[in-house]
Length: 154
Image (cartoon, rainbow, N blue to C red; front, side, top):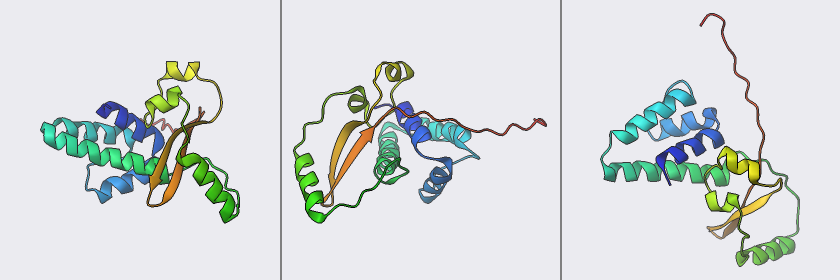
């Protein structure tokens, strides 16, 4: 996948308050917000040789994928018995995920024209076995609005 798609995914999935901490942890350049930081990340990528670009891409991909698994979610938790959890886990271990645009593009965002064609609903896109835990990754259309303060002085 392209560096641009990775950056777009990070921008839309990871809140700035979280990302600035992650960037500091990895000693990566950042700005006062996403827009300036994206420019700095792109410049850092462009200034590297191909081998260094691959390492940088893998670092940012790891951050992105980790956030998809453990970051902010829109979920509801239900209490279940250990037996029921085991039953669900067993069912999904060999489950064949149906094709969808979300599955084809995971872990990256869909383009606006692709979002227009997909039906409302929740789509299973990935099943991850990690450290004896089963993660089910779902996607759906998500509508959001952003509040931006505009200073009349600028």
